[in-house]
Image 1 (cartoon, rainbow, N blue to C red):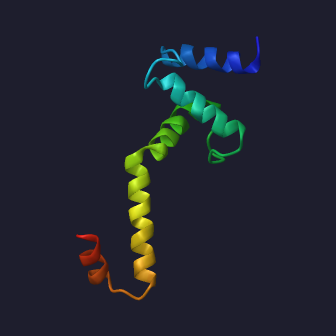
Image 2: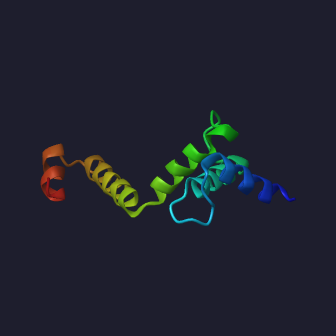
Length: 94
């Protein structure tokens, strides 16, 4: 067996779900394992944290999270441009 198939098999056994099932924890674990192996996970995450890291990655890839981050960036840019917090809130519709 290859390392990839060993990883997939381990994740499927740990989660009781298949990697190819929609919204499976095994798929989240695969995302987390790939992130860890590529050195993109926080250094405190270990193999046992693959599912948790994968869930965080999936969340960060979600459109809602992306919109929230874009809004925060826009607000930060407006605040650094010299606008007051009240002006920024009014402009952002808050």
